[in-house]
Length: 240
Image 1: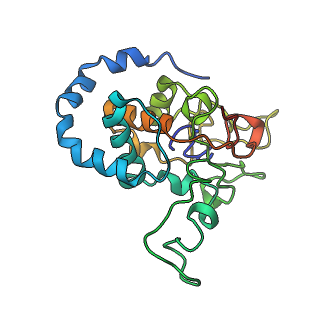
Image 2: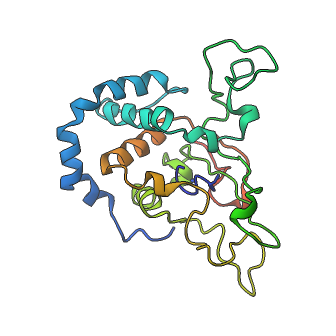
């Protein structure tokens, strides 16, 4: 999303952080309850660490969260499908499982140069939005920037709010008005919310799931990408 707009979705990943603070979440009964039963996630954790398509950097005590986050991002979800530059570069040449016009050598291999780096153009969203000049929506870069935080420096509170409530903390696509006539959403769409990212499908993940995804995104390599519309948080951002 996979946050701030799964797309900028899209894409493409600041605002209302008063709703939650990370400290409260980390000490909440809901999170502790998840931790008490974390042993049941062991197979998902191990699989997540195995299928991560890039080198991961994390502290030993974070292993379980990072592994679970990878499982959710790469197996249970398909975040890279939107949060990469598009089908043409999502997989390594010759290892694209969708390619049937040329040689394909199993198994599939995700392209690490574009992995979760954003940049997929969702301008052609057809009847979803009817406007004279439809908003140019590009999937956000979910990789950590020079601050070490994912999605261009998003705090966990921002990430949590984005997935739970669909909040676009970057405000890249406001509602159209007399003074805002391009790259905007006309009513009845709410420009404060992500209109392409399927956050309603993800908002019921547990607190621990969201924390695991966030920690996983912190553990992947930074991709600088290219400057996005408005120059705000991607798909381009500064790497360490």
